[in-house]
Length: 209
Image (cartoon, rainbow, N blue to C red):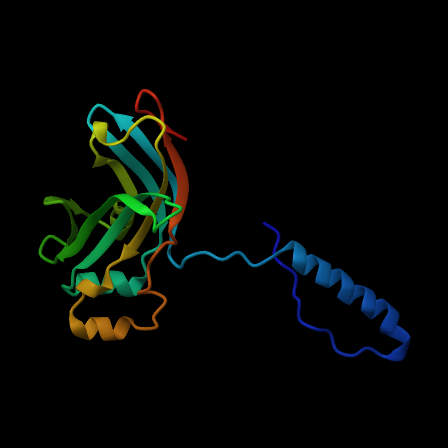
């Protein structure tokens, strides 16, 4: 992938080289415009999301790219569990008042460490699974599958909503001393941006897109 050019101002050239240096500066300026800095949330990025209508209700599937810093993993291995939260909302705009939030759902995952077994334990809604490596933890955390967020008859054909999802580390559930250490830390500020998209309910109850 091409790297953005260095946009640092050049030193003042000698009179004989001013014309050429001015051209170089102009070209560098144009290249800087062509290669803007891409902003992204530290450590977490949504890679795919889909809401489907099934016999069991409306289910959400999503994938995140997650980077767990070594300090977070070390904290888990020292006996402090970490809580990761996926938040999902569906809202409908109203011209006369605030948006109506039709669905607000949260899925919490707790990651702890079993020193005797030298394994991580991930708990979701009361269901636990043991994982051997930090990569296994990251892989399981990054996937949301068949998350039922509403029953099948919840919506009417033609309903249109704005859906939103994000992933974050819930530092509020850390012990108080750890909470103080997280202030201003990029490694502990683990959160994706809110991703928003429009969904429409079809005549047969299906969802598009």
